[in-house]
Every structure is written in structure tokens, then in C-alpha cells.
Length: 401
Image (cartoon, rainbow, N blue to C red; front, side, top):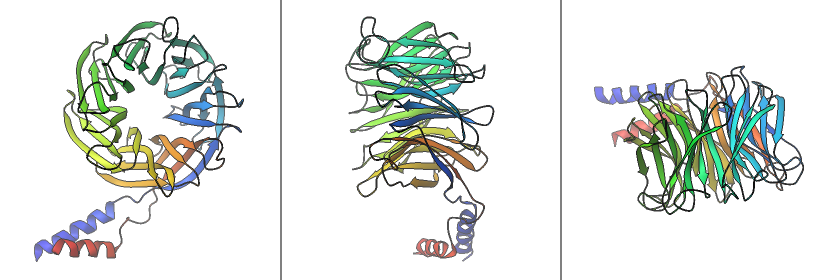
């Protein structure tokens, strides 16, 4: 009997400490009358946020877009960069001098389809330099997905190239100095498509890249994780996946290893969000799956857990943005499906304050014919526990059966 009351006590204690899903504080769309979207969000040292994506302000093509807002999402400035082709920014970082570095792709500069683009601005978004990389004569399709700062003041970028390498698309790793001058570039891959989606400068030296590979692994696309030294030479690489398709979209470093988020289709009839934790040698420590179609962004939270942004697809509501909070072991604490009239995806999310979260993405709810750039704030309230006594009693009875 004593053990029964102990189980009830533990259930009640768990219920009392469990977070309720967040509530919307504000939600805004940013942009003009044509298609706009946001791919990356970072908190800045002044308490505001920097975002990058694309804007079609002229109604033809798209420009790489850099947007600065204050802590309440109020616009401070925005800048568009590009030409007559399709240009887009996929990832932005604040730099040591207070400016910003963006990577993406450009179809406006150089010959061919698209080229990898690195753009550096000052604190007000004024361009200081840019670097366009791709095929020497004509680019067959090259782009950058992620950028990080390096210990020597330069930049490391990962993405893909069809102009160089061994196969269709190869994972591409590019190192520049502080002025955007190319120091080295490396390709990794086989005969099929291989793409780098996220790169971090590792505290123990070198760089860790996450993405997908169709050249190696168990079948289809597999999650690919690589560690290279400071010269871009491979230290180790690991694949994760099954007979169907998997991909990783962001990797972050932790004290004891790395965590990466993406999607998986193996072992089920539907896609799921996947979160994998590995040690410093790339050995898997644990894996968690969540209801949802894809996880595009991963950030650590102040309590040692993780914040995942992504989307959930359904036949009834279409595509909806999704926000998931986990503990340090990847166990889900809450998830919030952000349902709109049209389609929406959360491309990036970060923790703003102690109990609030900022989410950026793309929405088509207000204008079905065009996309909107979307920015929202969600907060955890003080009231409620997420479970009431009837819920606890039901669990308690189930445990006794």
C-alpha cells in the first residue's frame, strides 16, 4: 500500500512541475505585397533580433533579405541585396564587430544557375563585402546553408556544390578569412546527392557538419555527421538512418558532445521529427522521435533542454508551424502546433527571456497567392500544470491494473 501512495505522490509532483504549452504574446507578418520569408533568426547583443531570408519587393525574382527588429518585434531596419535573379539568405550570425554575416545563394551574380554567397554587413546592415563562389566558368548549382565564426576571426560555411566533387551534389565546406578571401574549400561525398545543412566551430578544434547523404549509409538519404580539423581534413564521419529517408538540418555543440535535429521516415509509415545526441567522437548516446514532419531548427534552452522549430503536415489542416520543448535528455515537455488558415512553417526559434520564445518562419495565411515572412513571440504562463486531478487519477488507476 505504501508503494501505491508513493506512485500517486510522484505523479502529482510530476504534474505540478510540468510546463504547459506556451501562449502567443504577439504575431507579426513582415514584408511587402509579394512573397517574403524568413529562414534564420538570432538574438543580438542589444536585446533585439536579426533575421535573414528572401523578399520579392519588386514582384520579380527575390533578393537576399536582412531584417533587424527590437525585442518586441518592432522593425528597426531592413536591407535587400541582389540583382535580377533569385537570391536568398539561409543563415545569419552576429559578428564580433557588431555586424552580421549571411550565407545563402545567388542567381544574380556570376554565370550559371546559382552560386554560394557570403555577405558581411556592418551593424546597420550596410554591405562591407561579399564573396561569390561556384563553378569557374559557369555554376551548375552551388549554395550555402550555414555559417559560423572561426577562432581566427574568419568564417566557415557549409552547403552544396554541383560544380566540383565526385557526384551530383557534394557537401561543400568553405573557409574564408575576416575579409571574405577564400582560404580553402573541401568537398565530401560520393556518386549521389550529399548536402551540408549546418556547421559549428568545435571548441576542441576543427568543425562539425550535419546534413544528409545518399551516397553512404543504410538506404535512401541518411543523416550525415562529419568532423574535420582546422584545415578541413576529415577526422571522422557517421551516418544515422534506416531504409527510408533521413536528413539533419541543424547541429549544436554541448559540453559532452553534439545534438542534431532533422526528420526521419524509417520505421514508420509517416515522417517524424528526430533529435539525436552524440558524444565527441560521433557515437550515438540517444535518439528521440516526435510527432511532426520535420525539425528545421535546434537551440539549447536555459534549463539545459532543447527547443525545436519545424512543421507538422496533415490532410485536414495542411502544413502548420510546430514548436517543441524537451528536457536535457530529449524527453518532450510540451509541443505547440501553431495552426493558421493557410500553410505555415517555423524555420527558426530561440529562447528570448526566461520563459518566452521567439519563432520565425513562412506563412501563407493572409494572402494565399503569396508567402509572408512571419515572426511571433510565445510565453509560458504561471498558472496551470498541464494536468488536472482527473488526469492524475486516471493515470493512477491505469498503473494499478
